[in-house]
Length: 171
Ligand SMILES: [Zn+2]
Ligand SMILES: [Zn+2]
Figure 1 (tube, helix red, strand yellow):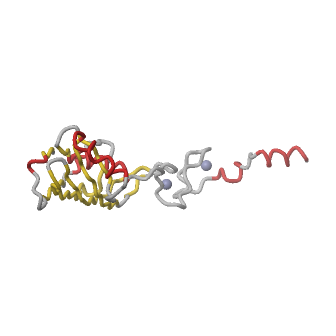
Figure 2: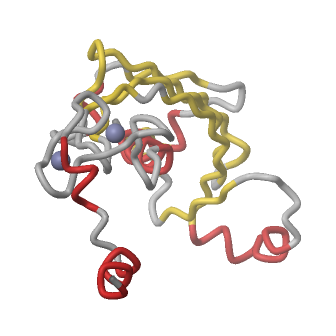
């Protein structure tokens, strides 16, 4: 969904995307298939558009430790200033001063791709380390049992740490 600067009112326009398929990530499954993404665009001048938006969805992620899937409710807000490159040269000083507490995105064309923004916000909001819970016990490296749900008998036999071997040698 591409919005050109000249379609945006100084008073603000609101856009909504509610189809998670727009994220375009086939590997990312969304619980209930619902998503709420809103974008309020406000034109500051010919070359600048301010965006504030909010995103809400619950992706189903795969735990790095136990490989089980779990729901990860995600809610984020964003404020971004879009500026065309031609104009930004004039405003470089202003940017350096950080006069506005906004992320600034420079554009070659006076056009904002809302789908791009959506994808970026989703990517930024996903955790680096995916854990179904802090206490996740993971998968047994010996028998492959999910140690959250199964009691395997490897525990007694898996003390082959260097210390265990050392203590054997001492005997
Ligand atoms: Zn897990
Ligand atoms: Zn095991």
